[in-house]
Amino acid sequence: MQRGSAYTEDEADSLIIDMSEQDQRAADAFEFISATGCRAETIFGRQRKTGGKVVVNGVVVKETKASRDFSKAIRAEKIDLMKGTVTLTEKGDKTHT
Image: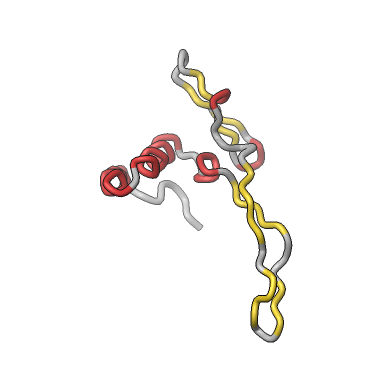
């Protein structure tokens, strides 16, 4: 079980620089995650699976469909530019500012 940060501050900074060369939006998202400690689903929405995977004789005949739930994701109304804060809704509907 992981406790604490997955990356050191130097490792995170290095990853952000490398990411920015490939995709600036991904680098910005990772920088926000690194700075706040929020979960990735707070940025990208939570993936929800619908339907079921059906396997016949070892072959998948019906795929599981997926959609994104953005109810806990950061939206404009959760950002307060005057105070310089953002309200995060995390696991268990806990909110952090």
